[in-house]
Image 1 (cartoon, rainbow, N blue to C red):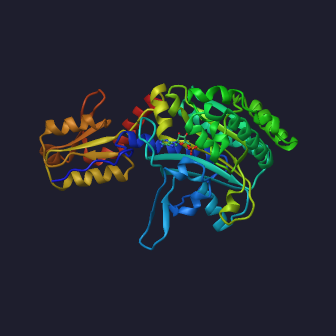
Image 2 (image 1 turned 90 degrees about the horizontal axis):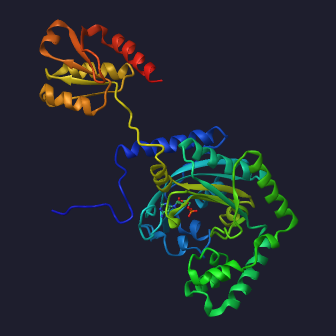
Length: 423
Ligand code: AMP
């Protein structure tokens, strides 16, 4: 008989970790919905072209994509990220602007799996289309910051940069190219390959021999137009006004060709440096146009769920908390009475589970204990005859025999008292 395992880089999220995932996306939705963002759900699978447009000089698109030909001979891909899908959706449906949306869900990249790096990983994110105002950049960054705060993370740092206007960036890229070409063979072979495709990405190299050339490279700030400089100044002033600490990082580039003006990244304080990027984003231009829509400016971020939860583990915050049960029905009679009683409890709004298979009282009490229910409700022969039930508090206190007809009222009274005591 064959036995199966998850594919490399893919994993099951088991309970109780799964409830933490749900809580995570719920906290995120609460934060961004309160700022006027609405959820957009796009397909996991898109026309391959949707992603090749986002930049063919990136590994994400050239090496890591799960692309294939479907049964209708279409070239499709599992999405490696969601910004392109959002822009495709905007171009297709032409909603009124500003269009403020959020998303959550899995992406796929054929990467080398390691801690914090998976082939299927989740992101939550927002995108806004149709607004140029630098105060929107501030809002977008502030929402991510607020989200990290709600999770309880304290060691997240924000780094920002501006890539200027597309013209500024082009002139900068040429200056970089000249600079790195002059380094010749002293540059690592990987960086020389990167240089041919996208000189900006050479700044990302962490390889030792490249370090002196990166340190002496031209600075983007020297290439800003007045407009780009004013935009970036306004963003920084906004962040200061909101008391959001940030570090300027002139070497932050983020890969995609479409980025311009503000770009940013959030780094965790506890993860290895290769995996310390918890999320990032920025302004992009031309993506909607490239996907068949009108010229529209965009900005957004994507935060990695897997990695952010690892950071939460490391900081000991936002733990897994499965929902506690109110009642566990111990059925030592067998038959319909426990079915009715459990249904009644659930209809009255209590979270209730029960024992099955007529197992012994002892075995079922063990289950009741493990379920973390506040009370066990025991249905036995004597109680059935007397139209009573036994209610046993599981976190201390004496058990009581009460009339069956008063069970709901009794639990409403005692359990609300108990939750009151917890507050
Ligand atoms: P990116 O779309 O590459 O800017 O990534 C945004 C965030 O998604 C990163 O900061 C990570 O937190 C997360 N992320 C990207 N790739 C992976 C991956 N292969 N596994 C887990 N998380 C990832």
